[in-house]
Image 1 (cartoon, rainbow, N blue to C red):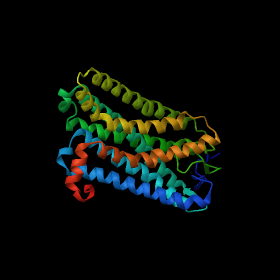
Image 2: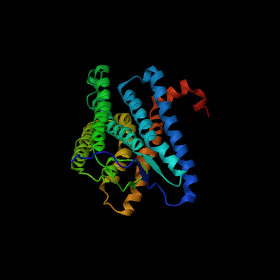
Image 3: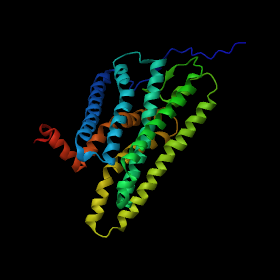
Image 4: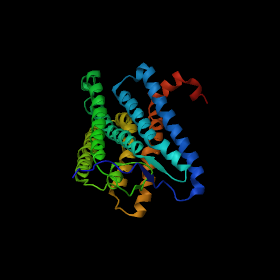
Length: 311
């Protein structure tokens, strides 16, 4: 009569990225270079913002948080992916999968929230410039950042607890190169109704909710910019939010593309490529976008690391 709710599966088998073993070494080198670029590029952004006082503003405070999130998100997936690329049997332990789930999901959720907060920051800067200092004071920015991290962590933690109550009796093949909640939940041999409800609620309230808030902020920003009479004024106003808008577009376009496709073997292969975009390529491009399109960051880098920018 005793109900067994223990986990029988001790490890999962990853389907991996590619079916051609002779390409593994080439992709290992490519992804290792991209991962190194993610860690070094985002770390450089954090260091520059931290030690250069003129960059101690709300916008760059949130950029530093975003850079840290990019490092965490990529580091939760890529090292194990690189390890599996060089192995014939691509596996991950149950504990390793749970850890990857927690770090990856909390990072992705926190990033969505931070992008929304950053869009609000740009909205205040352009639509209410006279009230910017008051509305985006230190006393407001720090709680906003802490809240984003807290909500991301709590959301991931709750979903992890719901996964730990499931039974996994087999099969244990993950049709991806890393652990995601939908793929793991689909492998359970017990009822996953509550898990699916929580994942659906997270998608609606966190993903869609923040996407709509970001769209709303930029709608007001565009309306305000269009009302500016001079072309120089319009250009100056747009330049203050162009970097963030580019990052938001890059991020949401890959996410939306992943989730609007119908499920098929073809789309699963495409989803892997898109997952590479938002776990590796986008975090690589973010510091490049913020450093190349922001004069303040370029000036800071020239002063702090003059040998980097010398031609």
